[in-house]
Length: 489
Image (cartoon, rainbow, N blue to C red; front, side, top):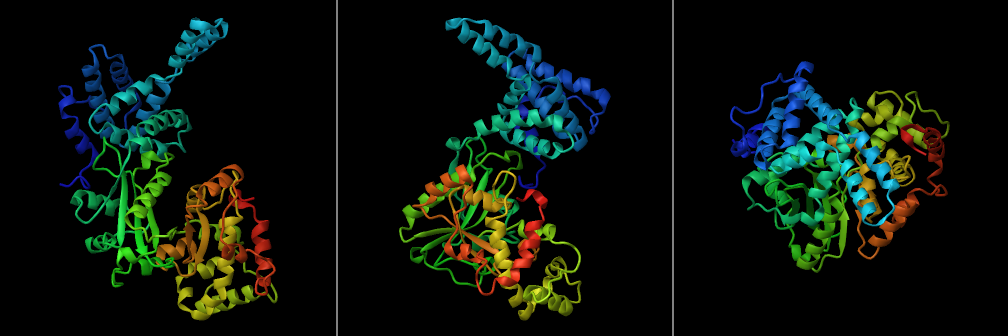
């Protein structure tokens, strides 16, 4: 059985075999019944006490970890709630250390009291997590544990402090300074290629033939690895070497289009960036990987002048639906409204924008497609550039990522992704985010300080209201602007 299909508890059981205590972990119900909680708490306390030294502590940690893996999701939530509530900081110890620090006069005494306060602020559970990390595959165990924890947070807000502790530890252990970038090729180990197929989160890889195409000479794939997880990519990026900007993901991935000589390519298109470990959410690797890949490609292929993405717009369709009323769209003399009414008639659906766009047949009708093209491009430009969240950042998560890393909105592409997913998420639109190497630092600073968004002239022109063919959008945009759902401002 390959690692991809082997349950994680079997992988860890093998890795921890030498550390297991005789008899293995104590038996508890998969759901960890309330009356069994004391046994788990006692095992955690024994692990922290380490009465017989480091080896004994690791044996207890291995037993505790194996116990966790035998639990169902209800049991794991209760396990983590015990860890969060019973092994947090000692509040009285913190208050006492703080009082003593405030009363110290300075010098060595002040330094000593500062150290004591710092130690009091470290919850005991942090030591337990460090013991997990010391086990073989312990880092992967903690990553998967945090993935579970993130799923429990909405219903168990008391786990937030445990998540904070675990995230801080993982951010330290998986600092980008420890990571190594490697290119994945068709000659890479089969187990790694399997993981590439399984982890691809943007454009699914459905066959070995398709994977082989994505690893041809004009297609590169790079990943970040950590020394303690040499066979487990943390994030990977797929790159196509082309001439000029790519505007369609279907064309870019078409297996029938001949390869080009990489030495003749002038553009590198980043078309997929996939984080592979849900438990590392909030720990940023993408910007550093992009920079390293750009540096590597520039050194290898000096003809490359343009570095751009071909990115999805996953929130656009959802945003349109949330902003528009469910009733018929009315607007006398409005060409856009007229187009919707005609589209609804042809498709046999209600005359609302959601009803028309949710019927994926609309793209097959040239007259409907032509009527909706410009309005949707304009609305998408405004969604990406003008619609903001409470913190002033764009609503779209992909836009936040690339704009925060110094890219600019270069071009919105009609029929960029006509797959079912692309139509459902973004009405078939895709966007190029351009990384102009001489503007990246300036864009990062402007975005970080004032949330200024860099955009090419062609995108800014889409948002102008004074064009001869834009008047018919005025009523629609007023309707959208009047709706303040989803935290837009």
